[in-house]
Length: 67
Image (cartoon, rainbow, N blue to C red; front, side):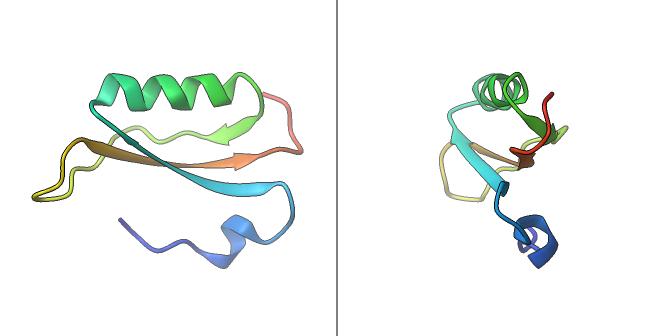
């Protein structure tokens, strides 16, 4: 996964969320749950790390904006 950029967390209320889940369906369900509460820049695919179980999904969240 790429590194977190300073701009992604430059101010209070901005966050990078990384979900580790058993499968794609679970990871995207968590993203959708958070998107219903605040603004997110959604991810469209998960990643898999060799020799590690499950998948990872990273997306960006802004608590200042409503969905």
